[in-house]
Length: 456
Image (spheres, rainbow, N blue to C red):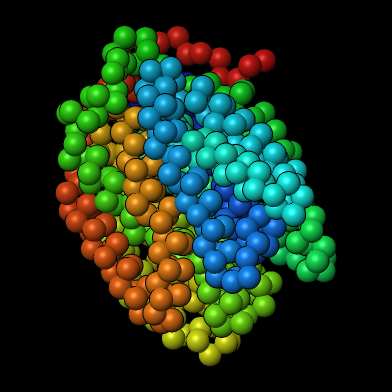
């Protein structure tokens, strides 16, 4: 029996081959979600830095920012559609098929955003086209997450699901790192007028090359052994959406609530902080982008580390403690950066994203464990997308509105307090892992003639 999978038996060569497939599945999950979140993060940063001027011109800068963040929210509001459509496909057709479609969809839409003429050229048509493409992006992201989590975790030992499932969780900071790195380089190399005129488009167009690389990896990887075993046994769900809603409502509610605080905290430290620090505290936008870049870089390590820790301690307890820690740090963060220190800004964002890591790292495993094995893709996708609507979609708008009305960070902290309380309730409603079904299908997978892992 391998340390990485309870069903890994046979010759050393067979065990090595199985472990190689596991590593490649982890890489495919990590690479694909990183590329997709690069596209998503470029849009998020551009919403704060460029889109108010290019697509939503207004005499009041705050109004333009609110309109730009509204298009940011559209991407989240579209996610449940992706969750319903692609989550179901993951449980009926397979994890791999949906991942290829979602990656291709977001690549096409992101590149298209890079060539939309601005408001000054085509008027109201410009923001309308932008919103339509943003909607398509959101649909793709809504379908991506559930399949990516299962692609890596179902190749690995269910007792280490926290670590293996974290491959998909590293996607957001990795994508954010790439996006903000590209944007920081462009803002450094170009003048403000050059960047706002055409420089920002380079980041969107560059995604075409990144998505092509991700497709190359995913097209060559076979579906998970567990799904192939379910397919062979004929035990796949026939009506997964209905089954989730009717038979597992508690798991769905727990998973949805668990999503709120991580999404809102992430929006605070990677999206809203750009607007707050540049407009309210008068930091240079390049300084803020670098701070986000550094914090995201640390998350490449802290997220899988947190996932691994959650395999060794009670996952729900770790999640809850990190949620409370993120709330406390929010109260510290705003006074810390109020003095205008760049070092304080870097430290504040990095620690804030560190607390986020210890929520987000265990999150994929926690959400997956709330549903039976036949409904994981559908249940996970629904929870992820519905939670995202009430969490990340509304957060930048609510942060901006509260700041505009009260001109204080205290209402922002109160908003996070509410989100943290709801997340802790969700964690309390959740259940601890039951790996018996994984082990049964893993054993069945070993008895099936294995499919060729890569197209030759």
